[in-house]
Every structure is written in C-alpha cells, then in structure tokens.
Image (cartoon, rainbow, N blue to C red; front, side, top):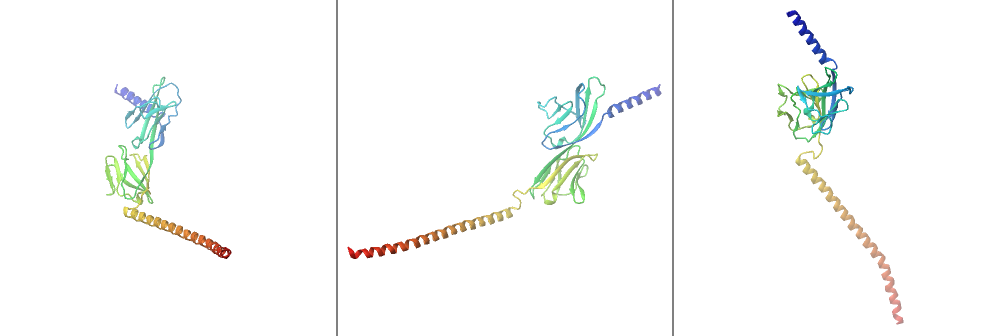
Length: 264
C-alpha cells in the first residue's frame, strides 16, 4: 500500500517538474530608464485566452490594450510592454501563457536590465536610487576591474558613502567617481547599469567663477576703451582732412577779392 503511494507521489512530482520546465526559456531584455521595453513571448496566437505575469512572487496586472491606466499591456499575440521604466522594474519576470485546449501554460522567463545616465557637478552629492529589494551588490568600474561599493548585509565600503531609504549616496563628487556603476542580484545577474559623468556647467569653486567673471569684465572694458579710442582717432583724421581741403580754397577766394578791389 505504502509502496504504491510512494510511486504515485514520485510520478506526480516528475509530472509537475515537466510541466514547469518544458517551454521555459530565459530571455535577457534591456531598457532605458523613462522609456518603454517589450518582453517578447514568441508564441503563436493559437487560442490564447489568458496571460499571467509575475515578479517577486506577485502577479502584475496586465492590460489587454495600450489604452488603459496601467503601465503594463499586451501587444500582438502575447508580447508584454512595460511603459516608463524605472529602476524598480529591474529583475526577473515569469510569463505564463494559457491556451483554451491545453492543460498546461507555455512559460517564459525574463531578466530585465535597466540602463541610465547622469551627470554631477564636482563637489556635489551623487544620489542613486538603486538599492532595490532584490539588489545584492553595487560595483563601480575602475582601472583594476570592478570595485565593490555596497553589499547586502555589510553596507557601504567607504565613509564617503551612505545607504539610506534605498538610496546610495556618494558625498562630494570628484572626477575619480565618474564611470560605470552596476547593481547585481544574488545570482550575479545585472539589474541596473548607470553611466556617471562630471557636469561641466558652472564648474569650479565660487572664487574661481568670481575671478573668471572679473577677468571677462576686464577684457570687455579694454575692448570698449579700444573701440572709443579708434573712433576718436578716426574723427581726428577726418577733421584734419577737411581742414586741409578748405585751406587752399580760402586762400584763392581771399586773393581774388583783393585783385578786384582797385577796379571799384
């Protein structure tokens, strides 16, 4: 009796394993923060009546068309579109596609990676909202490879870093802090990649900006003085030319008048 029961349980376990593994394809998808991305299912539209999308063991509401209030909807046969991506969307997704005449669904597994770029002024704080619930490690690229900045359970690796409310903050940003940052999950899969550059707008300390402004003002002042001097010199040249032209004519008229006076 017990032997037959054990065989039945073993058969049920094998059957369940087969239905969850068959058709399970892992697909890597990348998307840009703030834009849309598509999770392709690559399944023919043959009597599909329902799709279920799960992440972190929770079902995600999926609209049948784009014209809905949600951020997730289906397109084509069963492709799933996620709108206005944020860092919190990164991670693993499971899509189950159910057919009318099939007892078991087709399963697709996705790993969504989010890309972004940002720039920071020298001396300011760089705040990255990347410490997701499924984040295990944050690294930065360097000449010697990847340097760990934060790990789950151990926190930050430097006193220039703080970990608070899901944000990783780098204080007093320097040129050495530029580069690529990535967030990994516990399986070593990349969740987020951020490229950080230095902002050149209004760079420099207040004293440097003040000196630069004074230097520019001094140059502008010299330019104005030079222009005025050129105008004065041009006016003087014109005046001399006019006087030189008038003087011979004046002598001729004066001599002409003198030769006519005796005849009067």
